[in-house]
Length: 95
Image 1 (cartoon, rainbow, N blue to C red):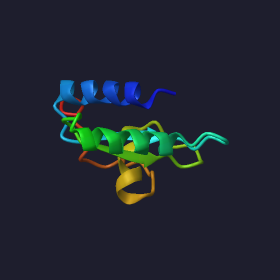
Image 2: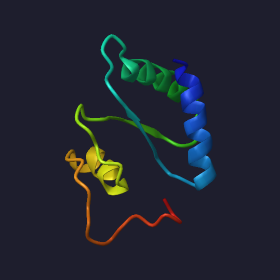
Image 3: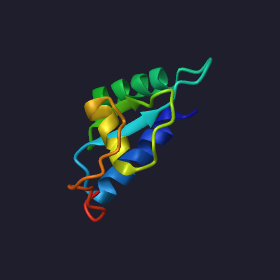
């Protein structure tokens, strides 16, 4: 894995949509600590002042997380990963 290439792509996508924060989900894989490699790369990038958009790492739960967008948003915020079926829903034009 090339963490800086992943983070470069994340920065481009975040800047393209005008995001003020980028959240990068990672999975824990046996034998590979992807999160640790990304954290190291993020620390180096912060020290160098490379990124315009701050990045938050979020570890996906071991169980299946619904593809419904509010479940993905609720996981790092509320730590539940439960979808929200009542308004307000995410505005795709601004998401």
